[in-house]
Image 1 (cartoon, rainbow, N blue to C red):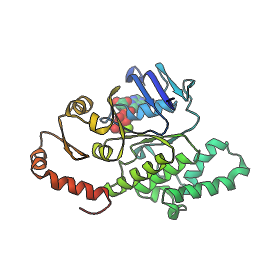
Image 2 (cartoon, rainbow, N blue to C red; image 1 turned 90 degrees about the vertical axis):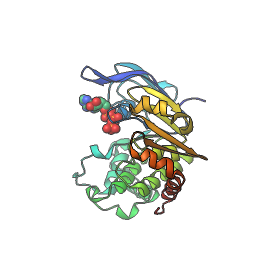
Image 3 (tube, rainbow, N blue to C red; image 1 turned 30 degrees about the vertical axis):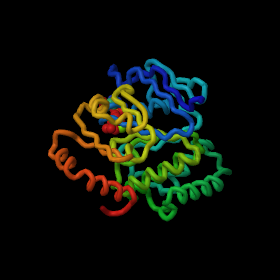
Amino acid sequence: METILEIRNLTCGFQNQPVLTNVNLSLYPGQLSGLVGPSGSGKTTLIKAILGLVPPWAGEIWFRGKRLKPGTAPPKVGYVPQVETVDWNFPVTALEVVMMGRYRKQQFLPWSSRRDRIMAKALLERVGVAHIAHRPIGELSGGQQQRVFIARALVGEPEIVLLDEPTSSSDLRVQHELLHLLAELNQQGLTILLSTHDLNSVATHLPWVVCFNHSIIAQGEPSDVFTPAILKETFGAEMVVFHQSDRILIANAGTSLRHQMQDNLPQILRKVHLNHNGHKP
Ligand SMILES: Nc1ncnc2c1ncn2[C@@H]1O[C@H](COP(=O)(O)OP(=O)(O)OP(=O)(O)O)[C@@H](O)[C@H]1O
Ligand SMILES: [Mg+2]
């Protein structure tokens, strides 16, 4: 199958410090993948490099069989930034944030604004936050802000969306809902790559994971990739992995939690299951 996005031997960094070294990654149309790695491992840098925001020192990025000029974004890409990096004091409403995503595409053509507004409203509805369309973005909860930014990424009608830690600012239930929304968008054909720290969410919700620490350590289905050896190589820490039927649970080893978990695993797994169905344990 032809790739939608291909990163070939990419090396880049800041000042003289390399952050990504020799990264090779292929994404296929319709793939839903999680990018996991420790803080500082270069997840955001990789996403920005794909967007052409961090120039390559070496290597190439290809979109649908065409090599992209260094420093240019793929033509049909949407981007949801890490919320910690956004200035929430910017005085705009949720609807205006979504419409900004459209302007980039339309280059401020004034006569397109009515259509843009209708489309932006429909997308806020689609991601479940139409009721806050006229509220200032800075006043919304982390989960609502994320949804507004997902709507903004979708308004340019992308084929692929890159999300940087979309679940970091929300509680378990909101995280679950967000991942569910992304899975729905994926089922409608959207290719998605999201970065996250949350291994357990990834293991439960995503069919494909990429373990990353300055370069690709491993990739595959969570049950194949989330092994103590690969997790240690990725995170530099001992982790324990529990399997029960088709569920995986990952915890830091070396804490008393490990023993608690071994004793109470069936109960903990039941709680995780309930949480992911949106109920209180
Ligand atoms: N604009 C920049 N200038 C200089 N160094 C930077 C810049 N952006 C990132 N770095 C450095 O690059 C490295 C990787 O950072 P990056 O933000 O890509 O990591 P990350 O995996 O996204 O981390 P986190 O999980 O905390 O978001 C870090 O050492 C960081 O300090
Ligand atoms: Mg980051």
